[in-house]
Image (tube, rainbow, N blue to C red; front, side, top):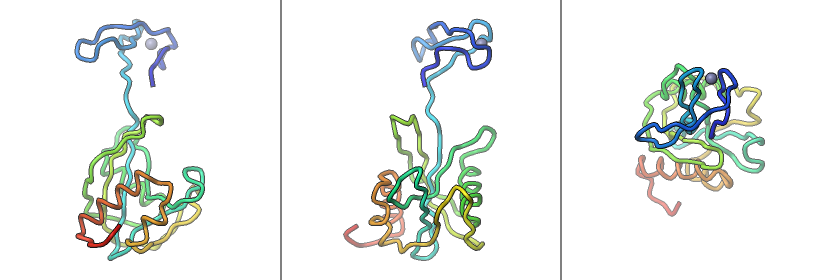
Length: 168
Ligand SMILES: [Zn+2]
């Protein structure tokens, strides 16, 4: 997001040279530069044997299942975000996080940090934000995630990680 006014004091920002970033909006009152930063969020494929945790959230995709995802909040590291989002949205505990790389959705200014993780314990107990959550067969996941392109790329990486041999 390109800032025009200071979020702290409301003053109109002026452009100022920041050396390595070029011209950046700047508040003279607060002496702060407002860099054009993406919003970091996590996407995680939780694995239990040959199953993967999928959810349905119509406000994201109407007719598609998705992986667990959420925004990184101020003060937590990315691994904490992954563990917290899975616990909040599905009620289960995970471990053995493995980073699978990043992806971007430019129009939404999202920087998506993707992970796989292993189920440890807990019964599925979805939050109110989630319409449906359950384990799906890993091999069927790509078909069930029709609209979730980022999620599908994550699942393909998971299949590669676990050495799945097939045509998906
Ligand atoms: Zn200001």
